Image (cartoon, rainbow, N blue to C red; front, side):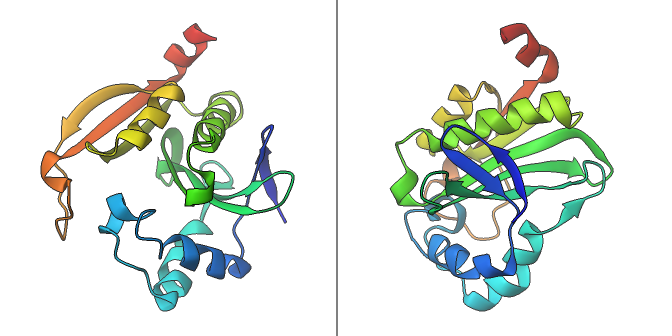
Amino acid sequence: MHVFLETERLVLRAFTDDDGDHLFALDNDPEVVRFITGGKPTSRETIRTRTLPRLMHDYPCSGTRGYWAAEEKTTGFFLGWFEFRPLDEHSAAVVELGYRLNKAAWGKGYATEGARALISKGFTDLGVERVTANTMAVNTRSRRVMEKAGLTFLRHFTGDWPEAIEGSEHGEVEYDLTRTCWEQRR
């Protein structure tokens, strides 16, 4: 198991083919995917042929994967995943931060803890200059995590949703944090 990062309570590790059942459970909880698919489930075939390959992709510009399985450090319990993915395959300058955690992890500070650790690693070890994150405007929990992790509101925009889901009519929001701002706050 390749451990990418550890925090006080989390282990972020590389995904393996063995994570299919964890991802299936995560992506089939209507509350977890409410702001992603409108609560619609994801098939095992989609997990195997599309989700896992995306989560296991290595980015040449950073020499790392862009997605990390999150486990509770003391128990090894699968909590979900974090994204810290370069927007350009060939440059680690701008990365997208994201997270999807199961309900057992909600409200315990795991998302903020993992996000802060990834941001720190990105700015200190990976050559990141800017971190960006976005969510639906109505996803107040995710927006709060972004703020607690140090990102600030950048803009409101309307995304191109292939299929409208409840709340998408309010648009999306983007938050960001630059290395310069992060260094000034330390």
